[in-house]
Image (cartoon, rainbow, N blue to C red; front, side, top):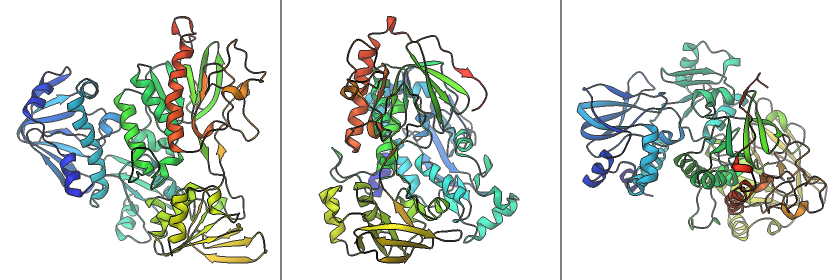
Length: 565
């Protein structure tokens, strides 16, 4: 979308009919504000949504000593962006100017507008999404800063966590930026305190864990209730689809995610074979839109929440969290997906986050611009990474163990790779070792047919090999295949673990009422569209299963506030 068109979508002006409709909405109040009065400021939680009736509202980035004006909202225009729905803190401040009169809408009131006034709701949601895109384009937006060395694994971890959760931030490297050095001195930050996360005068964290960061940014919040109709573990395409369909159909829905929405697909820079997007869509954009839908329909999605175990109490699933809490579910969907397998060679683990990466996005490309890099793997993810990186670096070596790219990669990607002069395919080749001091410096390769050894100097290796399912938290009651993927449906026809009188539903596991969808499921098609379809389909089976429960009620299992695990 051209920048001017994007700005028009981001800052629409409501017409008289829309303003009148807004004025009659419940949980909406018309208020007057004095000049200079703050309506909200960066870091505020549960802040209100405002629509200007008269006067102006100034939107400011207050991260630096001198606030920066980002926008001025006039009559018919409104405040807010995606965090207004997802429950995160405000990333900008809003100040009333010229004797502002504005409609003030509570978070619950905004959700009612979106669900019961679709014409008005569509304008608001489209504006929220476009505003986040504009913030990424505005290089001067500095609300959140990460200060730390490019050779620090923790700096990369924090940046990666923020990127996965689409939190706007800038990165300052003290080895290259004098301002970063001054800030570290100001905060008396030693090497073990790096990275420092700075949010103007609102937030200062020293080398936070992902959980601490999630809590500080409002991504992880206390659970609203003790039991849910549907608990989804994993917010990849399957989990997000199930959350949207479950919440939109009236099920109380909780979606638990430990790192960030989107799963592996969320790190793809260009998905071109997903129905309805002929020019392609990034995984981040797809996940971002899905999270807005999840929030619009009222599902709860606390990020930074690690599931540590699963037990059962009568008909209920009891999910154990890293906080020591437990939450009960009438139905559970396992949608934890799979991780790329580690290469398992000398130097690999030590250099993860410092030259060895498992995604190829602008975050990683920023670390190796103008260099030669390696991509390991022969599937679509590796192909997409090679094509994307070829636009960012001097040369890409695509390393595959076999000799045929066509075996596991879509034809359109194979053609692009073969036609790109900046990509060289190294067939019948494997990684033997990696070396480097604080950052990757060299990779040693071996040809598995001839035994020839080759060393390539590179600051980055991107690995996309195999799939290791995230099923270590599951108990013996959930049957898995010999590779650790969850068995479902007909595959359980001969299982001793299945005890119900009826046959299992298509996506049902060996425990009635527990379902699996997406990459974690044994025999699934490893494609985004398939995962979305399975997630949506699972909700239909959830409804069928709940008909079997007496009064549709779960066992009486309260949320436990036990010791931290």
